[in-house]
Length: 436
Image (tube, rainbow, N blue to C red):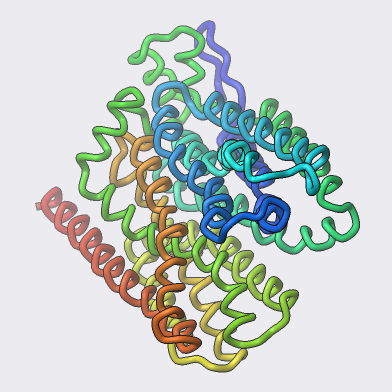
């Protein structure tokens, strides 16, 4: 970056992307152990299934809800401060859980500790909320024509964390034990947060503002450094402005299908593989990790494809693949066919996730942070809403419900496909109006 007057800008777009990606990847560390821990707490504390369900869900719940205000906050202060606060809260939660495991688990734990565990779980989940903060932070660094590639690399690489951790965790738990694993993951989270502190950088506009430049002057200087997108308002205004744009809600619905569906399947597939197709727990975990890692890797290239084909076209193709995969799983009763359906859904959802955040800066350029918060935060609720529906199919029709439940993805996939076509038609109509 160039130097303007008395102001000195630190970092480059690539460095900004690297810092945000590391921060997001690290954010998953605080919740990686929480699922296995919650299952072990069930016996030690005599928890009911409902209590265990809340315990498992609370990190994802806080991680989703906090995406909305913290992403919008980026439009006021840049992404660096929100990132560090969220990672800091995750460290606090991780320290608390480590102490519980070291000094209370299992003999000294009782149901009276349940509220404490909920609180610590919610704090640990703060790291997941870094996703939307990083989306906004990266968006302000890159020009519109490179948004898909940059955001795809950011989100795809960061989303590799759950799959990688799911492969490493069984080995860590068997060799280090629960307490040892928590200490290793705490060190990893703390080290990663320190690394982000040194690498994470705000885009030029926010750095100029931090140096004391007035908004108009900061925009003028940042444009010379190549920045194209600028915030139009503060935190609350960013949320309100983006909420008034219908495209925000269309993209949210699509993201509910692709990313919410991704979270839901990551949680549901182990049960599907073991209960419906009778594979071992280890095999089910491996197949689920393959799904998660495939979707994350495809997301990286999905952003690049969106830069070339356009976000709407990429979303349409991605949703068609998702629908094909879901259709196969509805009728499958064999392992090879189910693997095919799973991989099609992984590719479709990964590419769809990349396409959505290619479209966010284009659809709501005046409030990228607010729009990213709504889309990233509420879209992730698919991860909470879909699994109970899949479970309801099993309760209603028995074992066959494991297959027929994938009809849910066909329904929401068709709705999202219609919205993608609508977004494309509106963009084409506007383009024709401008050239007329």
